[in-house]
Length: 224
Image (cartoon, rainbow, N blue to C red; front, side):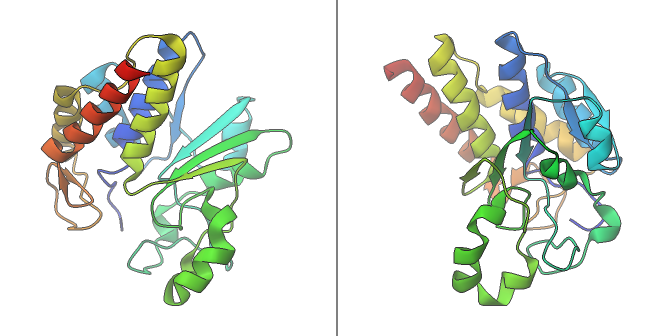
């Protein structure tokens, strides 16, 4: 959103990053100075990994990652600008971290729910036909693997569930953790991207509805 972090994205990113760390991988969460407090609030709430603030993709690539995961990170449009779902140009509040996806030899996994996120460029030809009025706002940044979802946080939960299945133990979120992260986000001024209100909801969905999604994923893991 314009000048404020959204409640969608931080929770899913922290849950997946924590799951990766619990499987023994070296993990860091990269974000910009506008969203740093939101990511740290989520990490503090549930014991997530460290958060590093950078202002460009080159600064991220300097850490030499072998995998980049974008979750609800805006990707530049064809004109090089960054747009939210209201077609507002919010480039002034969006440091170009998406350029890290253009690095040579770096694998990219991306999660998004609107088509304007980094990685969703792989769907741009189809989305341009489906959403002609939004075509100019769609991301041109692609990914090796892109996961389109209804809510980006849910994509982070799903990725943590996949790791849970592979490791044989539950690494995803519990309902009370989702509530704790949302409360922490509201405390630092994050807003719901749909309602634009600073409240414990994500894209209009309550914490209870998010907990239901997490519970369903945990049931899927337990039956795998």
